Amino acid sequence: MANHSVTFPVTDPQEILKLRAGDEVTVQGHIIGIRDRTQIRIFDQGVEPPMDLGGAFLLHTAPNVRKVAEGKYEKICIGTTTSARMVRFTEPLGRQYGVRAICGKGGFPDEAVEPMHELGMVYFAIVGGAAALETTQIEEIEEVAWEELMPECLWKFRVKDFGPLTVGIDAHGNSLYRDVQTRAKAKLEELFARL
Amino acid sequence: MAIDTTTDLQHTVEDAAAHLYVWSLKDIPQDLRDALSAAREKETSVPGKRVLETIHKNINIADSEKNLVCQDTGIAVYHVRVGEHFPLHPARIYEGLRDGTARATIEHPLRSNAVHTITRENTGPNIGHRLPIVHWEFIDDWDGLDVKCVPKGSGSENMSFLKMCVPADGVKGIKQFVLESIVGAGGKPCPPGIVGVGIGGSADYAMYLAKEAIMRPIGTRNSDPLVAQLEDELFGLLNETGIGPMGLGGDVTVLQCHIEHADTHMTLNPVAVNYQCWAARRASAHISPTGDIDYDREF
Image (tube, rainbow over all chains, first blue to last red; front, side):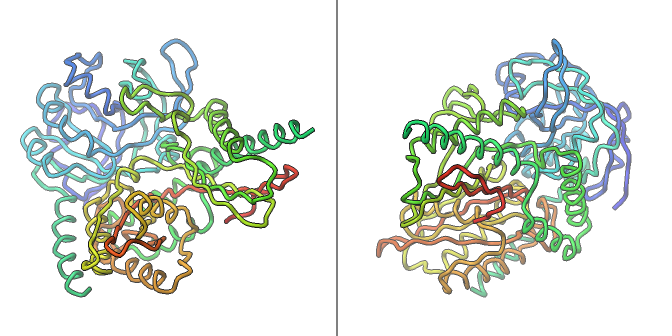
């Protein structure tokens, strides 16, 4: 299990392909905050996102912020939400917009594994609830779009040493979540036999 | 004079609720810190250790920066014990809790999570129709008021499960359902946390009891030895599933299993599971009939 530092947005697909399930990753550069309502607007309501998502790292978040000026927000507490609710957007995010990484907590179900393999995407597992730490790694909220969806807007954050993240699903068809579930289900049969 | 006392006490309840909500979000209880430290010692998987180290670092940063431990400010849930001689009616206590929740949300400010369940439009500062939620307990021959605030995050609340087992399923059916539920939940409820189980009563009451179970200090045991034994057994079994911290695989899947029970109908055997994430936030206060607040009295 290797350690990597990756800067987003990425232009070289190799930056994603070098990552393997279980590896530890720290992220630099810019990441984009996105959530349920943001993606419902893009895909179910067909509204083009006003930010470039090519090569992007998307974070499943709805931050606590303080408004300081028109269109300008200061961070209060930024953490990450459960990804599984938003799994159906994985393929269109990769295919239509060139998103390369999705980061959230709790993992994606197996239906994300094949699109991520085909499109060269990864899922990063963050520690859910570790928002105090995450907030210190976000240097600035640089942009916000769709403020009327507050707090489920499109956010652009500049980050430094964001992590540690664990590669939960890699671009080679491997998923830690699938492995853990397979082992746990076998274990359950053994435990049930003992009851 | 009576009107003044009521107004003053209601404001005291409001002050206590406002303080408890913010305090619980920033400063997690000592029993939880101890349980997370023990988990960090015990865990052997590489991703699991990474998660528990990060949690440890996060708690320290929340302390030093005086920031929220987790961004999800939850839905405000209160457990309230009202003495029969406490000189403020529960209707006014509720109003105090609601106003305190709103005030904390606006003044801090905290993220407001409350939405109308059909329109999904935000209903205001973490209050709304039937929000916050209060679990009431009425105490004979007492003049005090205890308030416990348990902000409940959605990641773990979404991992709630109910099964109407039949009597023939027995205790074995209860154990199987709890195990299947926690394996099925995987990393989504932010493990390792507290598994709350409610058994008996009715469908709705079993779920209510499961929520009461997650509100208890970690590792406390049900006063009925049969139920306490089931808590011990399930705790051991759940940690054999290998789900691990944040579902990435490992030795520590849960910090504890707490069970609350009620007697039930001869044909019923309900089992409810309510999960509380590792950031199991909780803060309590005792309010005297004269309006003094003591924040050091856990219940």
